Length: 432
Image (cartoon, rainbow, N blue to C red):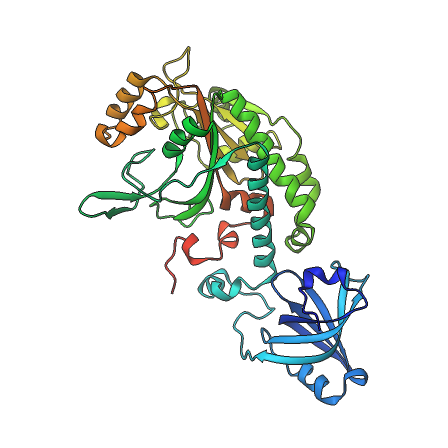
């Protein structure tokens, strides 16, 4: 007998199959038991009719506890009443692993309780939906960049130098010398771009920031492309096309997950319309001041309320262009006509989710970069290799980084990033 996964049920209508699953929930009505089954690919209903299976199988069905693992055998049928569209008429049940007093019941639980049980919380329908969307964003990312002839590069996770200084880095001892958990693979990607033209990385990054807001994670995954012979203006086009592609891919391939999360598709569809609006940092500050924000002046970085107001003024992702040089890293290209700003942009997501992309054109002048390294108080020897990139065939190049967890949070429409990060390693809280 063929064993299938729930997601493939549509290909086996009328066939008797076997499915390995867990009991997400159950109810019974007289001589019929309804089992909510999940197997990691989807959820659907199994129906056990006493008159068709006999007393022993029916009693087994009635006595199943939440999260008991089972092998069910039965016929796949169409089910027009459910969103999934299919169900299984169960003929036999084999209990694989018992589950008693499962702590996360269908009733409401507080966030603290769920966080303490997040190794089990991952099994819930909402977490399942979020992780399905996360998986689709990862799949779509590879498709987008592979289709455009980018080469995947894996920068080191342990580094001897930092793109943005060492203040928020985890320091470790590396055979009697200092090393850091990577906060970005960008500098290494610049080297790779000089070899391959267009490259990208997708891996973990670390920030030593003590915070429990949805804007800060100790560890998160970052997608970073770097493009040779590419201006900032050209990079912005890639950025907006990439984000629109991610949103459309979720709309096309995550219908069930969006239903579980209650995400309004018409809202997401707006985010596929290009181009995205753009506003200069100067005009953004003026907009905020004109609308009663007296806590921001030119030269300040934006906080959550500022970014939310700016984004909601456009009802789409919006680029904020050319931030003050004083609040940006050393590697950004100076503006050609102004000494106080650099050529960069942040993409701010709508609905209060904040920055999802940060990017810039990179400085290419050897002497300028050297002076900036000195100005930032960085060790010149640690950056000799980076300066070499400005000596041997330097070209205009640009890049950006997208934080995966925040993108998942925004596209999923969930209220807190902790929902999007069920694994302990993604959270600013030690596992109990």
